[in-house]
Length: 296
Image (cartoon, rainbow, N blue to C red; front, side, top):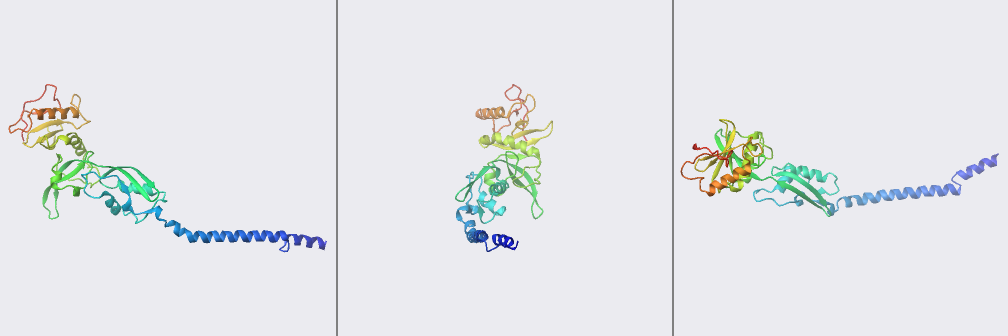
């Protein structure tokens, strides 16, 4: 009985060759694991700082700015959004972070896509906003004096940064006169008054011909029904009517109205030194033009 017990203890105890082999395997595996951990700790920092994965925000590549933007959209975005000094391509949220940062810039209408490339490079494809008009406003300066100013907008009525417009540059765009109220929102946001966006649609149609036609303003008239009129340099006015896409039944479409104005200009019937018979573009080309003078 005693001999049987010793035999079992010898088989399972440290004195057994099998047990010694098992213990040796455990020791080798533990040592290998410790070596792996030590090696990772040694090389992890070097791997994390590999230059091919890192780039500076100022090295982001964005499509070329149009001529009407004089500020640097990339540098503005880096500074205003406080992007970190180093961006890591291995960050799974990197593209969404960059897209959000550029979407917040007043000159960016839309971020189409953000692409990561190796070695460290990020490409950003954006759609820039295009100015189409300036809105006349009255504001109060820091001394309490009321002054007139111009607020630039795009074709959707979004306010643009006025720092990119000198007085001479602003003068090249159609002026919109609604009620002279300053907006409650800032650059990059849409003017809260929808009439501004409506007038901007008219400006978009006429912008290519604006200066040649000697047009000066788009004016909202609310007597006898709300409609828009165009003012020429000699104060002659042309009745435009409703904004594009919101024409009343039987009212001419915007493209047709533009063609009528161009035809009249070719006939030298616009911007003369004498008051002209009214030109109502709502019914232009349908034999229903009025004959009243439209002088201010």
